[in-house]
Image (tube, helix red, strand yellow):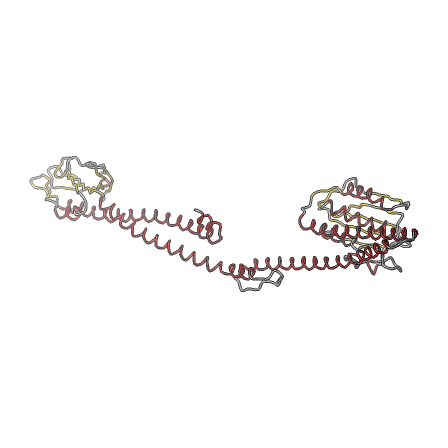
Length: 462
């Protein structure tokens, strides 16, 4: 039973069982049809023999002294009696039994019997019989009229012939079905051979080998090869990006950690209270930078992970923006920041990941407050036909247009126009870009004159 279960779970087993089921249904149908036509053929053959015997009996009738008589129909009946019991009855024009079995019943119509042999089925002496009846006009009788000749035969020979022909046809059907199943099994094995070849190629590969699979396969399997190569390509891209991210992260973490270690060393040997306080403040700032960098790295990894595995759900964008804006205001520290929010719709619904969108908007506001040193921030939501735009405008220096593309790449520290690169991890806008790309949206920048900078998040309203 376990072997059968394992067999059924294989593609070969399922396909072969399906073919076997179709072949079995077809064979059974053919067997029934063959049995029917074998019975018809046997019936016709023996009906012709029975009709011939009936005609011969009719030809043996004669009239003597005005009375109908019958010469013994030995020759007519001997052929049929080799296989079955044969019974006959002859009635003259008056309905009197001239010869044969008086109790042999016959329900044939006389007018039909005048045209030729009429056949019927019946029971005689508790045996199934086939009856043939024919009428012959006898003008020589004392009372001229139609004599009725009835010959009956048991059906043993018919049944035996039907069984013999059916058995031969059934044997042929069974043989052809077996050949069809064997041929199907061989064809399936041959058809699945490219899959086994693909399996062996992939199983023998080193995990680091992400080259496309190249193997000669039938055209029907090219879609599978294409899907596998597509998966390998995406996996290679993901691994490359992950390795690059790990390398960049290690590089980014190495400097602040080294600075942190050096500052601790200096702090241990500092005796001057004023220098000790200054070094302690620097140590705290470095520690804060390390924590912020670690948080940004984790957020970036979290966003990428959520984009791949978390399904979208319906979220309300206006409430989400207000919540993020409320959490971002404390980042201004001691600065007096004027914040405004407006939306052309009370509620804006779209499909997305709320946590990722919160992280993206939070990073835009963080850049404006921490790096842009803005003290005026305007957030607006504008709905269009099939999209919604979140615009964050501040009065900071912004990013020079020639650096807009670089600003969306991880670990790119871009300074304001005419200034050196700003401090930080360079991951904020990269996270925003990843979130927008996962939602089918985009990040756009706009530099206002004479001052001001805008970050526009465009999202489709699905």
